[in-house]
Length: 533
Image 1: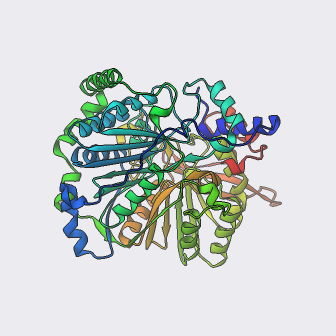
Image 2 (image 1 turned 90 degrees about the vertical axis):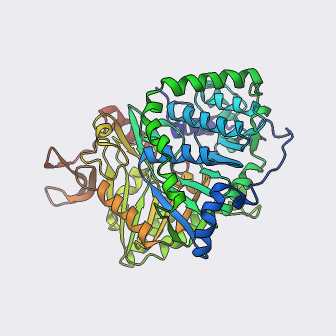
């Protein structure tokens, strides 16, 4: 069984403490020639640019948005954006798997390059699995360049060797790019929490992640493109061909092309999506104005590539967590948070306590122990659960098996056969403003990962997100966690309330997949790892 990325980092950090490993180094390939590039400067010369130019002029100072909560929609819109691009495509992802959906999108990217589209792909290297490196073969195409953010020197997939390198260079390798962004022709963008992999598009036969994207058009798109350019041209963005064993050849590209073509013809996933892709919906309807976007003011927030240097005051740059916290602190009536990993730290706890003291209602949805894909992150959350409840925060933990899939992004048939986990990252402020992006409410997102997102001033979108929150937090889908009085009245204990088979059920022991997972979480709470989580 593959160890979760956070657990691997935690194991590495523990080893660092024991071995007193050395300082950070430069990434491999740091001296390789790199040529700066920038987003398309005249997006209006493309079909996508022309489609959204007039609506943007009709809504001065506003951008157009559409929330995508269903996993299948997240895949289809990405494929349609790639197919619609005429000049440029920019993709920036923490994970880009070469599984079923990943191969279909890789094939679409290759077709775009064949018709003359310039493609830039920036991927992180923190959670690379065996087979993902096949993406690098695209670099042999004259219209495609691949860069890797903060890569490991070791390009294999033996855990022991990768962990050993992490121990020796944890100061650098613990720093990851968690961004998720796609931009077509600098005219249409997609930003949110989804990585590129079957689970995030909710078609994995074993597990799926409920998530959100927001499609964006108008003046915010050039800002998103600028953020991509900043990361693309950063010193930690290393050309893939500079890495050992990663120099692509025309023969490797031909082999990849043949493999992708065979996959498209035989994949059940491909057959499932082919009918939808043939209609070109929903993108065709959005472009034609038949499915209107919500036009609203918005603020782009993101971390600079050298986030650690900015935090230390060594360089000028941007930090997004303080910007989101500032908006949250201005909440007057209600703050709703959706986050798969909840490790608020001291600053987050101060924010929540201040909001409660001001009389604001605070409701948070996160993963239960049985649903989480990161047991070590849940162990960090366990430190904060009782203090949050004592402050009056309302806590909901999503179950791995949903009684009602409405609002989950999954189909009713899929809901009966797969394990569900939350992966969306949303903040809803007084049901008037909405944050959607890649940032979790945890210490890793605040200090160790770079993140990106949008704060949108739209009661309509905020209400849509709140309705999804309400659908997921019905008793059939989650545990409502409370502090209940002990039988003897001498204290309180945690309790998990839900509905199973139509009947209310209360657990006094935390629900888990099995006793070993519960024991593992308890053991992990003894390690001082909150800063890594």
